[in-house]
Image 1 (spheres, one colour):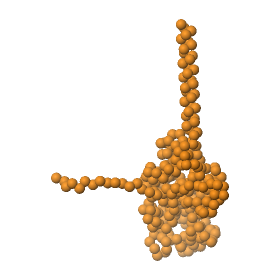
Image 2 (cartoon, rainbow, N blue to C red):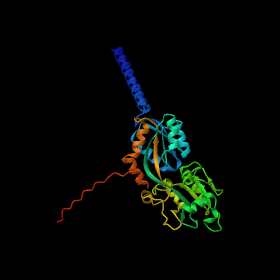
Image 3 (cartoon, rainbow, N blue to C red):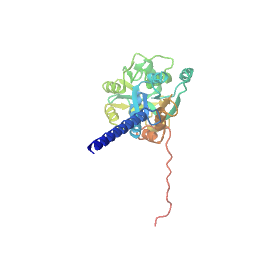
Image 4 (cartoon, rainbow, N blue to C red):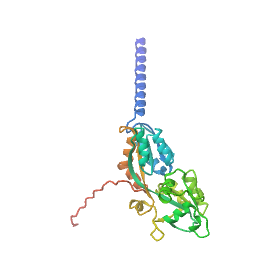
Length: 312
């Protein structure tokens, strides 16, 4: 009898162990399988979008536990190279790919898909002691070319970029001085935190960064940045009204240097990359952009029923 009980215990332990191993194996398979809600992917993104991308991906992973998303803060150029070289299946930058870039991808039989998910802008930050509160596009163009004494008479003004290969740096050159090189008064640092610290200490420096760092006034990082610097309003000409980069002025395009946040994917339709793209472009992702101070690409319709019955 004792022998039979011992034998049954051994069988029970063996069966339980098999079930546990099988269960662990299934979990590993689920985690590793590439689906819209599971698998592993590297997501490269322009460092200027850090606050928004981190918030989006944190929410996605909280909802979908089997999604392993490795965030890679970088610059615009490296993001596109990572997508091209297959180091990343999905990237987030502040513009769609150009025709030339699309042709280079097509030459490798790669046809990236792009979703525009939110509006954004280039922001210009200065120390609290800076002498002015506005700047125009012609004045910016002169500063970019190195004519730094024309902005404030008798003063040498420096321009500092968040990164030499950031989207902000590229867009300013392409839009304002396409045929000129940056002047000697222009330099670039490594990231926005370094930029804010440098600008806050120098009242003769204008910093160039992504407005996405400054849009969410409830975010602790943004609060710390805005304790040190202020944002310049920008006008199209010296005679025009200057506008601040904010949610409303970006949505209406009244701010002169607007841009768009794009999610660009080279992964298959049924993949984690597609799941991330769909989430950010969907209702929850769009609402997060709205709450963090950027205009979403689309807003859900709100149907309000009004009861017109007279009150008694």
